[in-house]
Image (cartoon, rainbow, N blue to C red; front, side, top):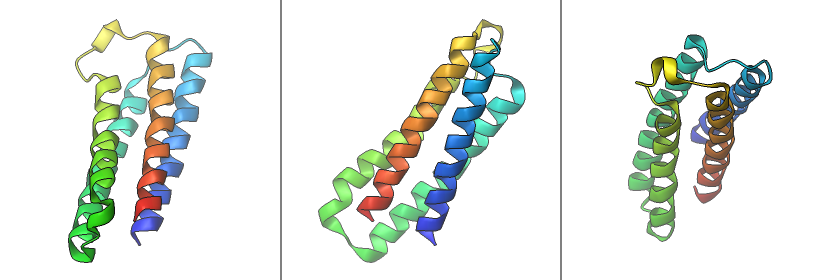
Length: 117
């Protein structure tokens, strides 16, 4: 079940990346619905990280725990860094492209987490 949830997150992240690149292509900064979607994906990532840590504790897979912790931390930190909740009117079209690129990076990180489990 954890693998299916991870794949779902990857698909949503790729969809967000396409949305962000679409905003960039038309010259628009990230709009409110896009940022709400990014926040919802971050919430999904928090739930996924908690589930992965519980699965690790139950499975006692100590040989892959250090890289797993690093990837989980990275998946939780990247999106809030580029979404910058307090930026407001200072956003540009490049913020849309940056968020799209980070969505792809986080999708790769989630795939790597899936390969470690």
